[in-house]
Amino acid sequence: MLKELKNALANRNNIDTWDEISSVLPKLHFIYGPPGTGKTTTLCCRILDEVAQNPNAKYLFLTPTNKAADVLCKKLLIQSNSANDIIASKIDKLKQDNNYLAVYRIGKPTDPEIESLELDIYQDSVNDDLLNAANVIAMTIHRIPYTKAFDTNDDTEIKLFKLENHWDYVVFDEASMINLPYIVFSILSISKFNPNVKFIVAGDPKQIPPVVDVNDKELEELDIQDENIYSMMNIKSFNENEQLLRDNDTIENLKVQYRSIKKIGQLFSELSYGKLLKHHRDIVESNPKPLPVAFQKLISSNVMFIDIPLNNEDSIYKIRQLFYSSYHIYSAILVSEIIKYFDSTLTEGDNWSIGLIAPYKAQAVMMNKLIASFGISDKLKYMLIQFTVFKVMNVILYFLFQTLIIIDIQDILNVCFLKSISTT
Image 1 (tube, rainbow, N blue to C red):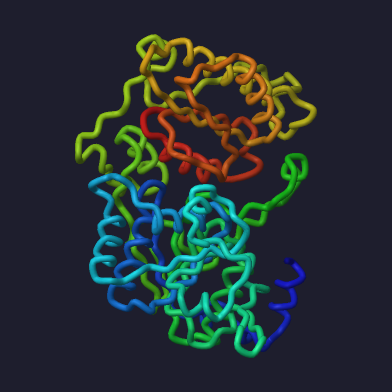
Image 2 (image 1 turned 135 degrees about the vertical axis):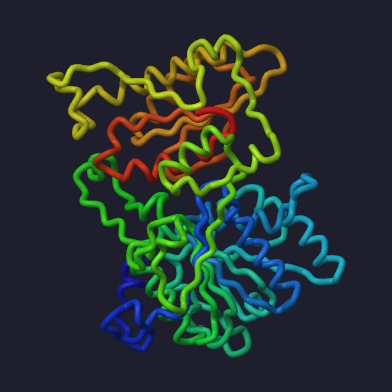
């Protein structure tokens, strides 16, 4: 993969040279979506509205992870039972007008729900028939340098980014996590062969930066390179009056978060977004799920910090040590015992899900073994989460004792807080 990227970048026929990168990038439209503000829903609605007007519209959807690509595909393919599902209503309208949205996911199957649809959504390769049929092609951005489209008529092939005048829109989702060389190469190469293409950059510069796939020990010693499209374009603030854009660029700030209760959402709005976020659950008076009465005696607030008292002179207090320190073990044991106690407070008919966020694989493995040994009841579901994999949970317990030297703590807290429905 790295060789393919190097070869693609080294070929000057693919991209033009520049003195100042910002001067050669085409027009970009940014969708600035803090967690829970409906960024993916916004993208899906745009796609469906465009296809309603132009049934032949062509979207290339590029993401840093398979999970992100799957999430968009699922929203476009699997309708919910909610009466408020705006995406479902737009899909129904398309069907009424005898239109059909064709979505394809390039790569090996990674989501059982999508695979179970039996619609051949996942494709290993791209050919001219698929290109003609598809409205949306979704894949990880790492495939861009080498993915080819095959012409079944004359047995020729061409790199996907070299297709001339094919794409109407190219969308980068979770853009903060995309390494800068990939997104710059994609923009410059695709726009060279598609001068009229429109680029949409969706994400949040305050969330997780590009992630390097290394083990925990190497990560501790690594000088992390977290440059992305936002740092290059100097987009940091959520305040539109402080966002310095190029003359031809535009930005859309999503200001209503739909997931968390106001107490949690407001905390993060003040910490990261200049108190500019509004809270839909407060507007519609959606109350949080109350904690079990017995458990409220232990954790009585929506946000609670538990400090493990260790003296400064203790060697295990040094946060720069992982394999030679027991500090992370204390937190794993504590959280596992909290889960055990929480389960003991549940009564018949209760149904809870808890997310456990760990900075290190060693912590996650230890907790998994401890909690499994407790024999947790069916009334409680838990998921061990490492940074970039999140699902909506009733409760989120997180511990960040050794993350300060690895990643900006605000990036992680942004995701942790706003992924919680009830309390943290």
